[in-house]
Length: 208
Image (cartoon, rainbow, N blue to C red; front, side, top):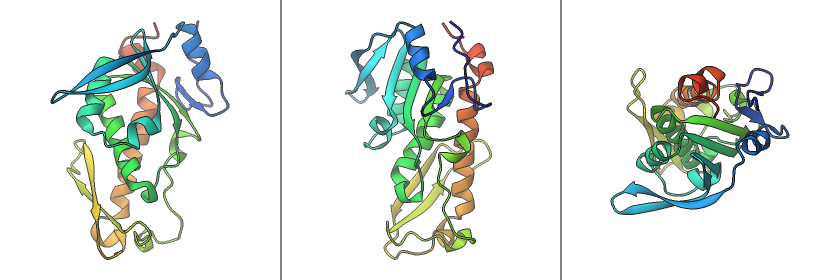
């Protein structure tokens, strides 16, 4: 079976909701899901509810709507050569914790050289909602009472984003530029495209 059936250049294994690409991929591998506990360090285990044959399947909220961190994601990437992420999308400053975790997840899977399959609400360039308005500096964190502070923003080395209460609903641009947030989104988008590409898959183990 040739699984390289991406949509309009999204990437070989990047599918927009409504495409049956993920189903075809799993069917082609005769995927039979089972549960498995993965050691994530410090005596902790994370239960993967759908895995088999080196493939782990997650609804993305399983990974980003809970208090998981980089070490957990690194362990998942090390345990499973292929990771399938479903229902990706709708990430924005309003969902700052989820967006932060998703960016960290992508980084850790990238470092683990995991082969990625994505089913998303939209094209890779549109899964992050970059906010409305004509002036990015006017975007505020009043409703969420959040300031987004970036750590480790060095060329090619950013691994995480620290989010903490601002206490004043100050403009995000005053604390950490929205430009940096968009840079982090852009980095994740780029890595999603790369990790779902035919070239990445062929370089890191192929389709079987």
